[in-house]
Length: 278
Image (tube, rainbow, N blue to C red; front, side, top):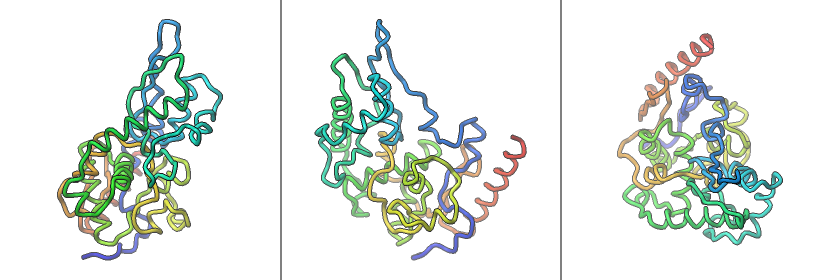
């Protein structure tokens, strides 16, 4: 059993890879940020529906609700404490992870409180309808922790096909007593979305730094959708401990540190070439 990660030097042990973003023309602000706000308008131009994409953080959802309801920026965020949201005790009043990605109807009576409640109630129904299988039971995680894992999967997986394997890497690292070392959790703490994480940031003292702290972060880092939740509940079987997206559509999973180093070297080579071509 591997109880610690070999010295990381300058590499990321688990990351998606900037090349994928460059190749698709996306900005470094990540997929969720790049997705435009989807509003369906009625005859008079007022939105009648609001679509929340998978992976959006609570702050993005709050901004979207403000825009949809034509309210001053910050209104929805301020409404959270008095919205009476039916959240689990583990959440501590923080709806992150429970603002379920879906399309929600809007009408003249819609308020930030009613829209947020609709999202949380939808999440509760979806989550409570899911039953942990071998992956979750064996790793002794509760529902809130499963949602936290799903949020990391949503942020880290290059595509839906890889979600089950990313989930397995998370569980395997937890089982082996290894830090998760996910850049996505650091990004959440810093309120950003980027693939550039400095060595200094990996040593910072904050509860979402999964390089410096063992175990899961204290809350979800976004709002996962159905596919990420399924992966967290029933991860793909495998012994992987590392992954890196060396190029778009090519994410390498391995249990061997030396092999991971070779994959990272290929990633860095592709990254350099992409910068030169760009």
